[in-house]
Amino acid sequence: MSAGRRITGFLPDDPEEEALAGPGLVIPSGPAAEGPLELSTDYLGLELRNPVVASASPLTGHLEGLQALDAAGVGAVVLPSLFEEQIAHEAEVSAELTHRESEAHPEATSGYTPALDDYNAGPHRYLRLVRDASATLSMPVIASLNGVTAGGWTRYAAMLADAGASAIELNVYRVAADLDVSGRQVEQETLELVEAVRAASRVPIAVKVGPHWSAFANMARRIADAGADGIVLFNRFYQPDIDVDRMAVEPHLVLSDSDELRLPLRWCAILHGRIDASLALTTGVHRGVDVVKGLLAGADVVMTTSSLLKHGPEHATVLIDHLRAWLEVRGYASVREMIGAVSQQKVPDPAAFERANYLATLTRYANERKGW
Ligand SMILES: Cc1cc2nc3c(=O)[nH]c(=O)nc-3n(C[C@H](O)[C@H](O)[C@H](O)COP(=O)(O)O)c2cc1C
Image (cartoon, rainbow, N blue to C red; front, side):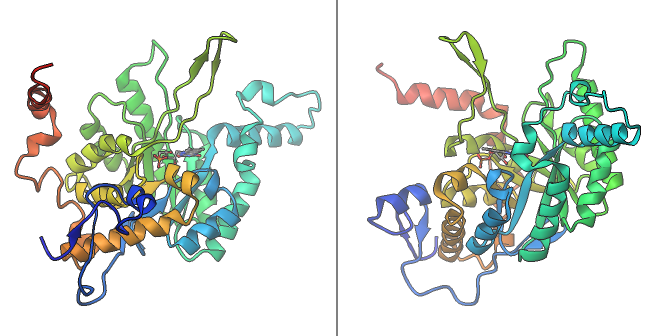
């Protein structure tokens, strides 16, 4: 290891900074490394100034938030998703207007919930946001589409690209609760959707998926083969809760913490260098050390939402500074050199990322607690 103190935070003796950096992060103690550090990375064929990306959230849904993230230095932003239901609803309304059927009640037929427009303002204003953001920001703007079935709505991929989006993120958020729908069918429909968006889009596409697949390595390769330029792993499913007083189900959104990093970390490590697609890690990136881990595992970019909602857009600068400090101490000249350095293909014990390590982990836990 090169010169540098091993400390628990970026600024020694500052507990707040220590918490933001995470355990094990090191800072340079001597003079800065020779030559400039290269923080840029390739993602979806785009060159990003650094690998810290603000993922889709209310913060990226308005120009003010996006400008604050730009000023904080993020490598790219992903806008909140425009939903299949919203697009389908808009198409229905246009059709109804064309036919002048004033008695129609389109919201009753589409499953559309008008509350969605409170989140991202609906298709028209979404396109305007893409246009304004692409024209004013100094980094790539990635628009997001959310849907599960291939259909006419996927034409929006072309409209988002025309509005200036550098890439499209297809957010496949699906809970396979239908007893008649098999895993094979879910996979097939997902791949058809990827193909449809690929065909409609002239800009790169990334596909954001949840972790619930029976054979994710194979599915990831098929998503890439279906035309995805990148895979974003993993979306975080919000689990409804039960209010026992009201005897009712209630939506429940809890922001993530760093403990949730390990699931996407494992899969980035397994997939790095093995599929023909960029990898973005999302979920659980809060501290400088989380950024470093994600890149070492093999992600081309790390995305964060919860940390920015908790600490504000300027937290992105803290994460980027921590990454720069780590590279300096470790003697790396660029982010590209470190990506995948601790991926499955590079480590002496590849089984550590798979089931083979299950027994060893359990045994170690039991041994550490002998005497209970
Ligand atoms: C309030 C909120 C809104 C979100 N909206 C979207 C969205 O519109 N589209 C999407 O793909 N992900 C959305 N996400 C998921 C985030 O982009 C991110 O993938 C997830 O929060 C996990 O990352 P984190 O651990 O950094 O929060 C949202 C998350 C939050 C907390």
